[in-house]
Length: 406
Image (cartoon, rainbow, N blue to C red; front, side, top):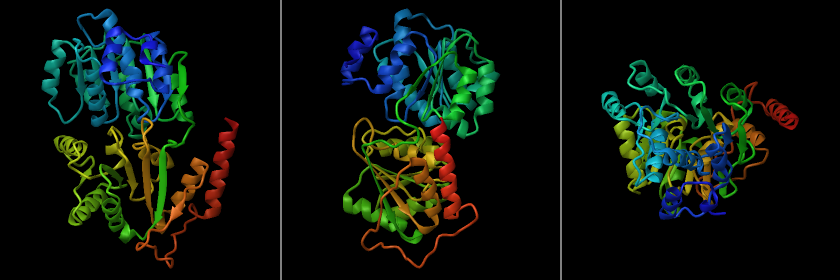
């Protein structure tokens, strides 16, 4: 099916043809008609499935139909990070090119006064992080009296980052009569409970089973000693000629350390985390997109909003504590039907996390040794009451039973 088969404005169909968008993705096929009809929507879709266009296109369509001079914003999109808010804003601008649609990204790290000046001139669509939006609401530099649609993008991550109080505060300041669209990586019980408080008879869309990874992602786990991980990573990048590689590290200090070690090995690597200034993060990201930086060493929070085309390699320096974060991490590659590779460097102290991850995914992940970087087999994984294999297997059985009952 082509985009022309969807009930979208002719100007949008023409613009999509210019962008060489040929066929809508499953999330776009299911979400666009319902959003145009004014339905509330709860959609479970991973990054890279085309979810931004799934809500941006029908909202631009509605604006094109009415095309009124903005008195107050008609659409508010809440996003968890500055990067994601800016990327969503860029998508709206790209799809609406050639029209007079006015959008703005309200994020920290940019002049609040300059943002207020833009808002005074009239804005149709606001994309914002919760904290900066509340700054404007409290100073009364923005009003949502004419709001028609609220979008919560990556709602699960906003809750993970502790934004629930801020979201509640924002909701109190919005019209009760509105359309609400909630997009999340997975529609689990927590998000269902959250959605029930916000949505009215929503259309529920779930593109992939919960906690699954894309079929086009090839996963590899290399058993390696902790002190050899960076050396193995540098060897793989050089030997296999990787470009634009995102490397995940749990801690900001570790990201800085890995980036420095890779630079010393002759690889252009840069850290990407919340300790960097906004301008520094934007500069690093721009260089990475242009191919000037080979490896981006990122923390989970900083990388949540990353949207990079043709990202072929994702590397886990260690497994995340939450198995769901593994799914989010490797979902940065293998997107839009492209092939991707996810490599995990597994040391003996990560083995308890691997057991929990495999229980979550309900499958085994293949492990192997890399010649020249074989692990020291005399090392033993640290064991606590919570990480004993029997206890972890019991947790896995409980999760499996709970999943079966749903």
